[in-house]
Image (cartoon, rainbow, N blue to C red; front, side):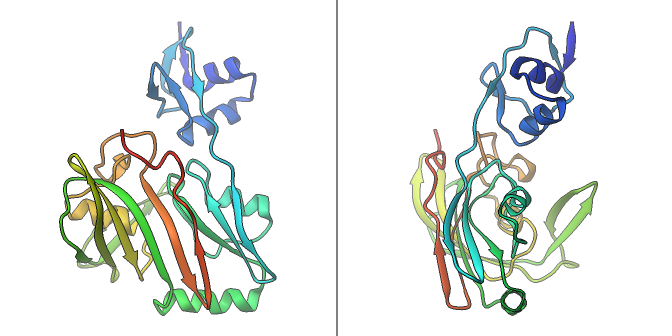
Length: 241
């Protein structure tokens, strides 16, 4: 007899239905070697699940103004902010790892927000993409973000906001390239949408045309603002098979 995936998982793990659904939504549940992507999908009653644990949340730096976190994939920015007890200065997508900033001082927060608006914040990401990139290039295309039902999707559009991403190849592995992406603008899903538009979707980013993988291979490695500089090493799972 078939049953919804999250209910079967709850029974197997001895947890609540809500907790089981959250694990599936976070991309941590596998069955038969494949990720379970729909919590309400009907599955055989004897299905055996494998649940992966996300990497630990590591604090990089803290003073009286700011907290820098090395965020693992599969954990939301909001979950980290709630646990730390301070508001987010910016956010990373659930599948993206790397430097995440929270603020402790309202005066500093106002200055930081202005720095973001003035494009004075430097952000450097790394990503693995499909396709071979041999030379640096810049994507200067406006992005329009559509939000509905607690989700967002960005696309290149003349009606969008200015968005600039500078892409540099770091290494090539088969028909896949590891790239560095520098951005000054910080539009929703900017790197994901820009790389899709350029024909080099991020591996693991199925929403933007990337091939399936354990996680989205996008990492926020560096951010610099108001005299601060923070770096986060790439996690062990930031690799291609």
